[in-house]
Length: 104
Image (cartoon, rainbow, N blue to C red; front, side):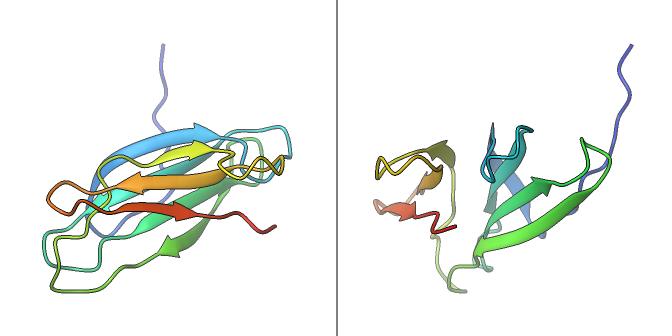
């Protein structure tokens, strides 16, 4: 049996998602890439702060308006090899690859 829990609200369509322990506290956090057409297309991190009972939302990037610069492939990876997780994201129509370095 599954029970549904709301961890937060995003502004647009959730287009990509990954789970990983971004804050190294032993529980999984959730990162979402949004697709909102020509709105601010964000990368949003939901930090698991109470074993899944409470979540804190962090906007990692809000992007420019009036572009198609959305985040269709957002994933967690230690891209710089420093032991903490960073975020990498790609768009659909826009050929840019974005890296968001975790400095915490």
